[in-house]
View 1 (cartoon, rainbow, N blue to C red):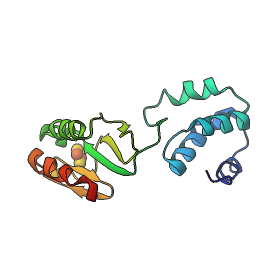
View 2 (view 1 turned 135 degrees about the vertical axis):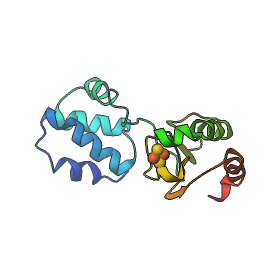
View 3 (view 1 turned 120 degrees about the horizontal axis):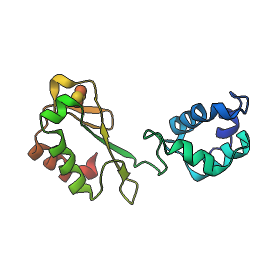
View 4 (view 1 turned 45 degrees about the vertical axis):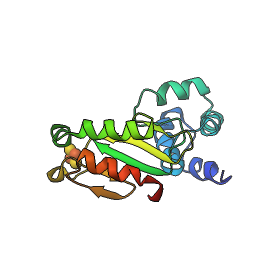
Length: 152
Ligand code: FES
């Protein structure tokens, strides 16, 4: 862990309890999740309990507490994608990786998330693997792609 990370983030704040959400957002931007170490450091900085921090952070679905996988697979479940079979794609990815959305594989290689809209609705259904958007994805194509996932 970069020892400069937390001092660098905290230097932008006054140390007031009302800054908690913004600090959590900065931490998650920086390391991809809210680690136990982060909660401990924030607790010391804001002088509030770790339980309070978990209580607030767990209220918002955007915060995650487990380390994300290195290869990100997002299946869009926005309205356009849902109507065009997004949930079938999500089932295929989940089945293949043996996890459900919101999780990483135990080896932290793959991260599986669902998205509300990936901004490419005309290409529905859409899957994003790392930075690459794939549109009009068929379940059979996705299964084929997942067979070669070690090459991602
Ligand atoms: S709803 Fe899927 S890209 Fe917009």
